[in-house]
Length: 609
Ligand code: AGP
Image 1 (cartoon, protein in one colour):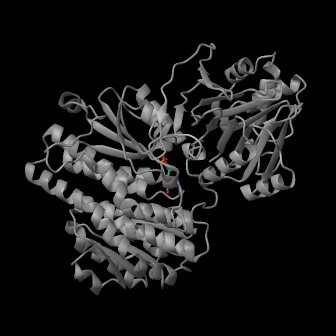
Image 2 (cartoon, rainbow, N blue to C red):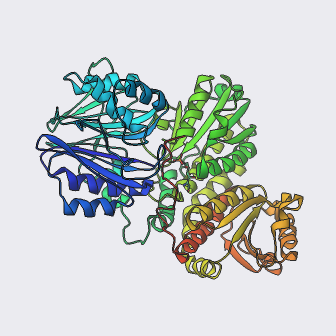
Image 3 (tube, rainbow, N blue to C red):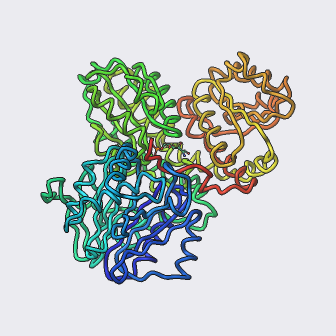
């Protein structure tokens, strides 16, 4: 998704903006630009394509100046082109704007401004913002921004500079992330922490409609009435190294190999061997509250949704409460039946996904209690939820989510255990077994990662597969969905996840000689049924790669290849089964020459609807 960086200080702004944008590249973009104040005017350079194109142009014609804004754009309104790239400027070029989000009423505003004589150069919704700031400017930039945003409907994170007030950088957000970095004699804005982490670890997390006014000496935050807002400084605890590749060729590979550490982090001080309790101190639901809950809804998008599907099985099995797992973009518009007795679990790595946020707000509006699982400290989801569980996976940069998913699975199992304990629906024996098995997961993931060479060979062998199926039952089906998404998003191979028992009702018609099928068979009680499904596809010519628990050699009689995962309880297999599938997707993408960390058409954080 789009990225924003802004700088004000004494240094040359352009390299700082470019470096910041480089760190936001992972979010996905199709054009990039900067606006820098220099000798009485705001100079803009912006181009369609990779950041390196902008960089090369800036080498040819450098812009010197110590106030500037930069942007990577992921097109929504208007095709990717130089003219539609940001920054967008006012008619006379006095004001320059960078914008993330969508201005929903921009057509109406465009007509209104056109009637007043404003001429538009681009097809973007953002250009109306530049013209509006210009229209409302009567000698006070902050006031002009305040008046401008009163007219806007939709979501926005804005960075605004003007040649009439070159000692200022103004920023505001609504439903789109924006942070302020506090430096010494210099200050920053950014849409995400890694962009400015090289310069400062002290951050203000802006709330909706708070206006940040940055000068080189300091930052003031005001509300819409212009009154000062007192904000606490948020101290970032991780460093630049955590947001860099550390010798790995891709962030995705690094993040997959970080999983044992991330899982330990998620568990740390929550499930302790010496105590009998699960410490989730930001989840404060009481037995009394839980007794009133008649149903739980889990809402999320993409990979986070797949973690939610696993969560459904876990909670239903352990806490015996009915659970529905649903995609946020559907949930938000279907007028869900919720009340004060509803519990909604929202899962979002970034904590900024537009559909997930809207679904959460809709559930809140209807009185539901919200538990959020998120990775990003201080994200919007974390701030608006009633109860919270951070996954503490560390920064996830690759678009394809891996360590976020496995830590979300652990988070879900902790919540399921906690709810089961509060409700009294789990006996001591199963609780003890779960606890012990959860502890072993990080080292078991490590074991699978150590076998990655075998998966690499397999991926290279099948790199030309045109169609891949992932089948499984129960929790294996939930993981099949994630395996299929991983393959699609980074290797662009068409794949489908199917409930193995449902295949024969139509989809099996697509299986032909050589079709690659991953058959997940890790659920002990469903093992025979899963083997029967393998036989069905084998009989139609499929090449079957089975995933089974170690020691379950029976499967070798049917499958062409078997990937074994270490033995664990059925309920916890997803954390292990997904790892070979992540590795397979990764090596397949590499073998096909795909840009693994920046897959086409995709963005890391989907902050628009
Ligand atoms: C996963 O690999 C994705 N690229 C995507 O599906 C992602 O999980 C989804 O957009 C939700 O993001 P979130 O967890 O930040 O809300």
